[in-house]
Image 1 (spheres, rainbow, N blue to C red):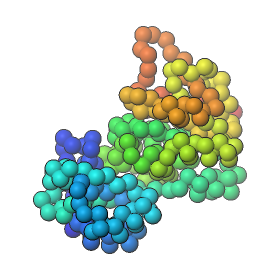
Image 2: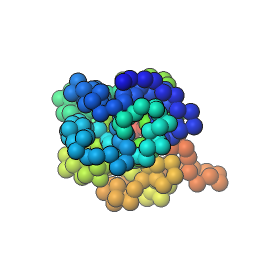
Image 3: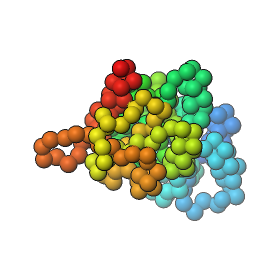
Image 4: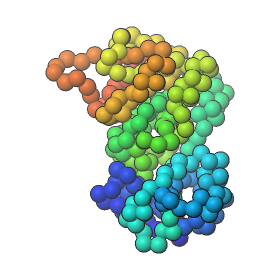
Length: 258
């Protein structure tokens, strides 16, 4: 069963105007057809044996699975059968594949790690700027991230359809792998020890931007090669994350064009 749903007030939890597939067998069939899902919602308490095949395929395809109360699913559809899968409007890539292609083309990687950025409009704006400044991929966690839905695509002015989005289960583990592959990690926080223009952005780089409320996780901060900041005057202590990301990415583009 496939329907469109406009969730209104629940847009933070569920993608608005997204395409949903309901029921165990329809979702299984879609997984077999390699449909790109943003996430799958499963009713808490559902008998695990009945969804073992579905869970196995979701794990193999690295699709986030969230177990939610039945009331949440009831908001989506009366006959959900305990399963609601959100079809993604974008394709997800693997970070390793993106890096291999970038190096094969003789370019220096510029990656953006979006650590738990949950506002859809912020994420869309970030994607738009990333595309304009030569970012090769935006890396997001599987959970605690903005829904990549029609609202996000609209906010990005279509950039999300042209940008490589990589969804990783563990950002800290990914960060370690990037470092082993010679990519510097720059965390952007107001507590930074140097300004962004003092960092060398002409080398392979992954820029880490943190969530609107909590910033970058402590684990990622520890892994960063440097913590950089944006010079500021005035009484505000921080900038909107999409604005800050834009300023940092344009500094990277400027250095790489010099």
